[in-house]
Amino acid sequence: MEAPSPTKPIDPTKPSITTLSVEGSQGEPSPLRKMFAVASIAAGIQFGWALQLSLLTPYVQLLGVPHAAASFIWLCGPISGLVVQPIVGYYSDRSTSRYGRRRPFILGGAVAVAIAVFLIGYAADIGYSAGDDITKKTRPRAVAVFVIGFWILDVANNMLQGPCRAFLADLAAGDQRKTRIANGFFSFFMAVGN
Image (cartoon, rainbow, N blue to C red; front, side):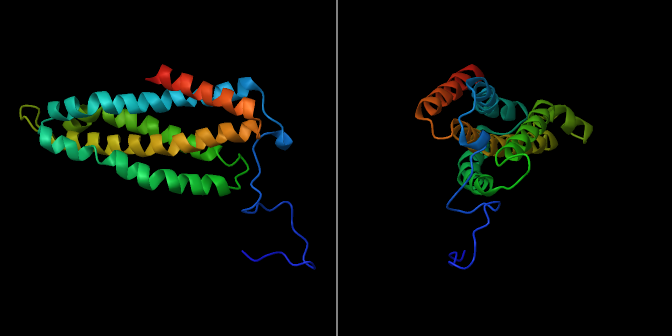
């Protein structure tokens, strides 16, 4: 990015790296009820994490995956956290969508969570429809559907978490009191989701 010269005026309608606009109205903090509503997303995020933690190993063993092999599925957490959150954070900070910087990522993550929960919940049925033999211990198609759903859920949770927290910071517009309250709301909804 080239530095502006004295003869070239700066266009205030174009976002720059040095001045990222907040999504609150004209830099004013948003009402607490709006922050409460945005923080409620944390309940869904935490529900997704709790779903993963409670269901992964027992469900894949039910589908016939040995315990030792189930541990490899857990690699998706660190890998998606390492890759997805920085990329989503980078692009959500620089988004120029007419819907706001964070909302498209939050919507995309929410849709991906819905798809993942469907795949995880119906993995055995989808596997059976695709040709798994229910009389055999291992059902490879159901396992594949479950693993795909699990990875989508992990990526979607990582895709949601960063933009949701950043959106709360945007709504607080630098007001430290409202930032603390918004983080309290987020923590409350994480407990509810758990």
